Image (tube, each protein chain N blue to C red):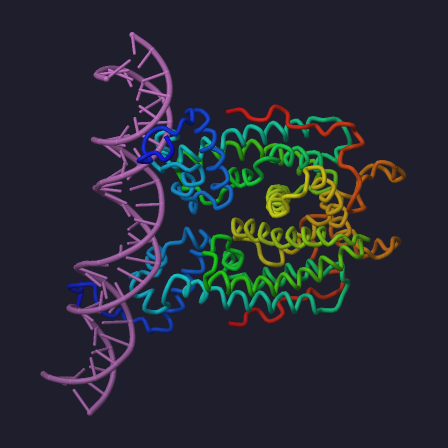
Length: 242
Length: 242
DNA sequence: TAAGTAATTTACCTCTTGGTAAATTCACTC
DNA sequence: GAGTGAATTTACCAAGAGGTAAATTACTTA
């Protein structure tokens, strides 16, 4: 029984375990390269198995995607709901949510991008399933951002929509950075985010020493001219070059 | 001469014009679906021409990509350099840069994603060319973010790196939102961003009335234990579901 | 009007990829 | 030790994508 004559036949890996391996490999592949660029052969190879087996266990490519998506989507949704439900300063909610997400993704960070894959074939089951999860998460995010905008005195619905996108994508950015820095624990990431948020505040809050409320242009939606305060709008500098 | 017997032969479109059409179509295709998912046949069809002609005019797929990339990259770099060179409050630089970018992209918004395409075949000319432009832009961004961090009193290089990514991706997010709202002028977008920044400030600025410096954990990079304060880290809730 | 040339297509080739049917190997029983 | 069932592969197929050689059409000009 040293070297088996051929490769066919069982390798002694029970079905549910193999299936699990496949899901993990596929999640990495989908998350890392995106649905469109992901290759089933590559997934199979990661597991050390044939494409065919993959199909037999998990069906079509879209089926496989959905099978990967579901657990991640559920876990993330749970984590976010929990984080938003916790008592405490509402101004810290974003950080709580981030920590929840980081913890949920700890052992499979790229999984976030499975959920937010932009290369899903439109009209398919995959896109449908993903959009459901995203809608649920977006609804929660919308709660948060709307609340935030209200606090800040803004009421423009487009601002709210844009802010929601910014927030969602921001999470993606942070996770992507995290993927490239495997050493960071979820806690460390959360702290880093807190620091970054503080800097972001400086960005809009004017580092100019306090006591000069004059030129804080932003804050009210609608009418008012852009860099209007200075008198001139710094209109289009020169338009195009090519 | 009503209906030409066959379709072959010239349609009377001069070479350089056709070439321009191709570049525009390709930029949209690349920007909209990403290099990997973009199809040459689709580009050709947009122009109303054959794949072959595309190849004859602009070479291989990567060649085509580079041809699309170059003008956009140049224009964006110009715009950003200009914006950062302008005199004025450094706290407004981000907004000036944004306006510059919006103006540069006005007639081809998706072009941004040509530059920041994540599906480029590694090792190829396309990836190389894109990385050069990105490096140039990143260097400028790094100037900005580092300066910002310094102002905010932080010195952690990883924070700086993360912040740079956040900024770059933020631009992408805003442009993506912009693509979906064709009505917005660059000026309107800039104003919207100003408002959003203000809200972001609120996010980290703590709406809690001043005078509670106690629990502001963040602020110093490095050592200090994670959520150690709370005792436990809210470990994985239940791990998996499937 | 015939030649020359620019613009464009037809027909093909090859490689990759998602997907399937049929065989093969192994472990365990009766 | 023959049979049964689970695990797994081999051998294919069709579609689509990138890419190329060779033909075809039309405009211009001598």
